[in-house]
Image (cartoon, rainbow, N blue to C red):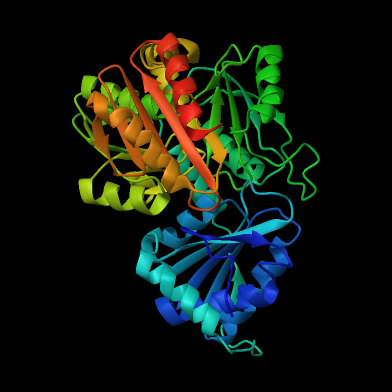
Length: 452
């Protein structure tokens, strides 16, 4: 049986078409066959299909003699935390994050919340596809385990709560599962002396997503948070996707802070604590990150996009932080995993320490390195388009890099063109050195080559 729900890094597909409880059970047995765990952490997001998929996995694990620590409805990073905190051999979050309402999926980690290697992930898929098993009566325990208090204490420990200024925040959980985790963290911060005034939007989980699928990366989803920031006179806005492993920031004017600038902010904040440390980043947009890291005396390390690549590169480099412009932020002290709660907290601490509003911290980056934002084009032959772009610019003598897709760099501007790992999309990013007119000119030139 071919399982179409396996993607490059995780499991994702339409319910009733690519994924159902029976397939979820096959995947659980595939995890057992490859990782041979004695105990697995299991969590789920707030989608209507998530309890059924999680229950099917729990039954399959139990029938295979694998104990299950069920942390219930939780974010992906809570599974990462619980897997490491409990010393479990694997962790699974049932989630489709920001995908359409009829989708679901799984994110899987091994011991210590390390990502599965490409070979391990392929082996899980092969074992699940070859599976001929059926659920047994269950022989290992399935226990409800509450790790949220320990998780909240760990996240709050990234900052000195008493040193936080009394900031006003707007937070938008998008009817995903971020709300309860945020509240638990806020309680710990308050007990430690923090005084944060919070306006909550769409805070409760709702499987019908009455306010739209939680994906703040889409421009059309940003105004509700931006407007609330301005209305409340808030210092910062924070919005999360459905499983809150990504967070998105808005300055006090309601301006959206682009992902690459959040990477710069966090790199600066981490290097202030750990001078000379390594910072890992993806190569889609990188000039601002490299400038920030260099100015702070750190070491910038580029790696391929994707959580498995970032986590591996961070371990190899001994990095304290790794960031992607897509709003995934990874920390050594969070098991090298991505988290949507640590970033806003560190930025709040950075604002408190510098005494500057968020806009002042990012306006210089916006001016020094204007970017196009990631542009996506639905294409039929991505390789042919990349070849056309390369042939067009090569005679001008640029630096060419194929670390992740195609990067072409000139002294004053740079592009990265790469294919999506999960969709028939070609993704384009352009950056310049302080020249917005050049940015517009080169965007038009490249789009003409793409045929957009």
